[in-house]
Length: 215
Length: 347
Image (tube, rainbow over all chains, first blue to last red):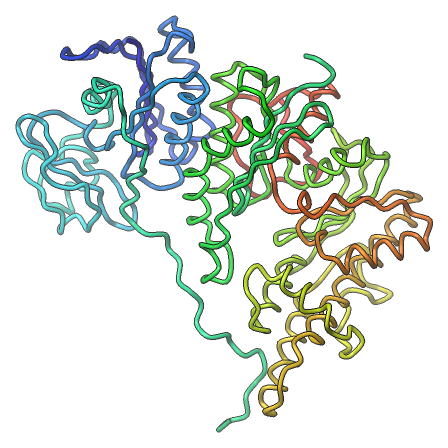
C-alpha cells in the first residue's frame, strides 16, 4: 500500500511517499526535506502536493498516513499532527503516529534533537533499533546517552562527544510505523510534548491603590 | 460552483474550537469545543493550553458539525479558516487542519479575517448586510469600529481600543469583584440587581478633543479596582451588583455613543454589533434604544453566534465564494495581527 509520511518535530519538515507491505523494508518513492524553521504551517501542504506530484500519485491512491508525534517544539509539531489527522480523515484512511526520534538513524544509538531552552529531546535504542530509553527532555549532560550519538551535531560540544548528523527520514518513519500499519489498528494520536504548558495561576490580586505604610 | 456553496469553516483563534457549515447564507451547523474551563484557574486564556485543546478537538468537532448538518465531507464546496488576528499557536492548528482538508478534498481554501467573520455571521440570521454599514466588534481581544462598504473586500477601520479590549475589562473587573472567568456573563448577571447610577465611573476618550472612534477601558478598570479597594480598606462591604452595573454602564455608554456617532458622521443608517461582548444584555438594550432614537437600523446576531464559532467563518467564506474573490494560496499561514482591512488572504 502507498503511505504518505510526514514529520514537523524539528526545524526541517519531512514529507515522503513510500510503498509499504508487512515484513519488508518500505520503498521510498519520493521524499522532500524542507528547512522551514518556524514556517511548517505555510510549507507543509505545498510539500505534500509536491511529493505526490513527484511520485505521480493521487490522494485517492493512498492507503495510510504516518506522522511523527514529537517530541518537538509544540507549535510546529501540532501542524504536522493535525495535518496528518485531517488528510487521513478526509480520505477515510488510518493514521499512524510514531515517536519522531525513532525515525532518526538506525540500529544501536542515542538520538538528540534540539528542545530549545538549552535542552535536548533524547532517546536510546538497542541493536535491533528498539527504543530502550526515553523519550526524554533534559539538559544535554543529564540525558542518559550511549555512543554512537546521532541527531543534532550542534550539541556535540555541550556533550563532549561526537554527534553524527542525522535527521528524520521517510524510511525511519515507515520503520517505526511498521507494527501499527501491520495491525491495521493504530493507536490514537497523542503528541509527545514532554513538557507542561508554561502557565502559573495568578497570585492574590494586586492592589492598584498605593497603600499607606503600616496598613 | 453553485450560488449556494456549502462551506466548511474553521475557527481556532482563541480558546474555542469552532467548526461550522453554511450553505449560501443558511446556517446548517455550528459545532463547538471549548477549553475555557482549563483556563479558569489562570484568570485568562493560556495560549499553549488552548492550542493543545484545539488539536485534540479538531477531527471530532468536524464530525459533529457534519453530523449535525446531515452532510458529508464530499459535499463541501469550499473550506474557510480564520487566518488571524488571534493567538498564533492556536490559529495554526486551524489553518493547518483547514489546509489539509482543502488539499485532500481538492477544494478551494479561504483564509479569512476573524473580525470580518464576526460581522458576516449576522447574515445567517438577518439576511444580506446593508452596505455600507457601520460595524462594531467587541470581544475579549478586540474593540473596533469599522466602516463596511463591501464585506467581501472593503472593510475600513475607523477606530479601536488603545489599551484593553472591552471584554478584557469585563474579565479584569470580574476578578476584582470575585466573579468567575470569563467575566462577561457574570458581570452582566450581577449587574441586573444593581443600580448603574450608584457610582460615577469614568468614560474613557469621550472628551471633545479625543479620537472620536477610539476606545480606552484601562482607566475605567483601574477606577473600579480603586473604588473596591477603598471600600475594603474601610472595612465596608462591596456592593457587587452596584459596582458591576455602574462599570457595565460606563462601558456600554461609551460603546454605543461612539457607534451611533460613527453612523451619523458617515451618513450610514445601519449598525451591526458582533463579538462576545455583543452578547451583553445591557449593551444590546442601550444600543437598541439609542439606534431607535437616531433612526439607525440595529442588527445583532443572537448571543450564541456573537461569541467565537465556526459558522461565522463559513458565513464569510460563503460570501467570498459568491463574490468571486480569489481563494488563498496553498502557502497560507497564520497572521496574529492580521489587519482588519484585509478581509481574506487572496492569491
